Length: 116
View 1 (spheres, rainbow, N blue to C red):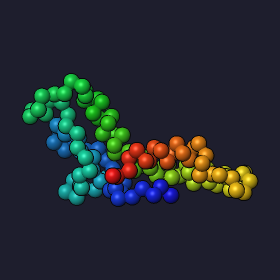
View 2 (tube, rainbow, N blue to C red):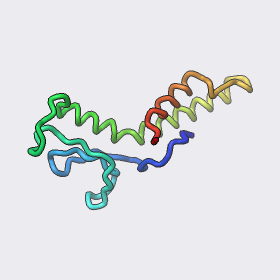
View 3 (cartoon, rainbow, N blue to C red):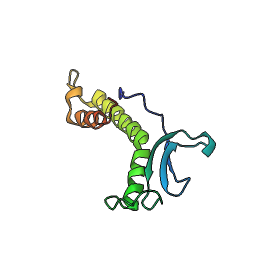
């Protein structure tokens, strides 16, 4: 339903294996089997100066949001399928479903993250 493909399938998880970097990895796997999706460096890693623009709490929240991406995409698909079922039951035939505001909002959200 999304037309969105090419990304690492979920679930994704946030791990902190070294104590100075949050890693977004394939979830549900042993550390030796992880494939790394992204990483975010925490302040005070001993190598780089801490970035005052991004406190640790915000970096951790960003990592959690990134890791939730596959789940959010799946929930968007579930929502659209439920809306399609409502349309089939309640709206007259020929209704321009693809132009509905809800569908446009969902499609616009996914379009922002499509791979170039």
